[in-house]
Image (cartoon, rainbow, N blue to C red; front, side, top):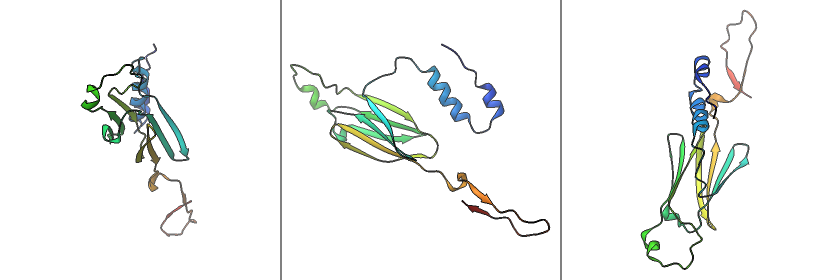
Length: 152
């Protein structure tokens, strides 16, 4: 396993520490990542995304979706009543799980739906006005007109 040193990135940039931390976390993460439950991440529009998680056997009340500190946390815990059943064969895994997704800046969760054994979480990236490109008017020499930025 290679170890990467992000110190030069910290010395030469300002405000990118979250990206470096994310890369460091991804590269040093344990190789044995949990695979349950299976999920998809799809791009639904230029700034739209959807995470679909297979949650067969769970009701919406047994699922928990929350966003905290730039992390989307999806957790499920089966109620105790299901534990009292006697199975001849149990092929549908309904064990408790917790899955985390790191969200980029300005990405927010717009909603979650549960249908046909799938939990769909919709996300959108909203670029603030201050980060959108804008056109700067150029004045002639000697003019004292105040400069004003206009959106493209």
